[in-house]
Length: 88
View 1: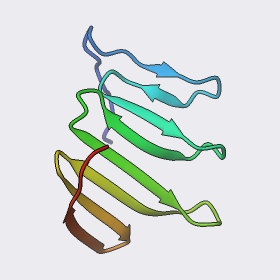
View 2: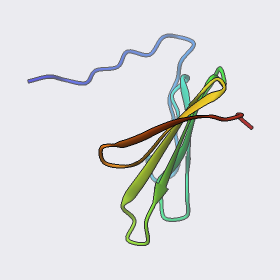
View 3: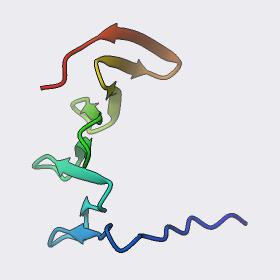
View 4: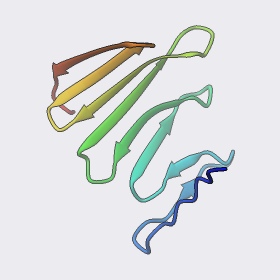
């Protein structure tokens, strides 16, 4: 059995919203939409951004990852494309 134990350093601390959802862990800041779905994660040093998209049934259909000036878009299972992008 593998356990997912994360030890936070003194500079890292976790904050949660009133429903127990992670807002920040000292490494990532998380944003959720009105339906409580994770929509964006931004690294605290602003070098990585991740955005999630959902369909009308609330299923995650896309994940976009920006690392510096390029992005990796994963629109569906098994599909990927890389393109230049500006973080902003």
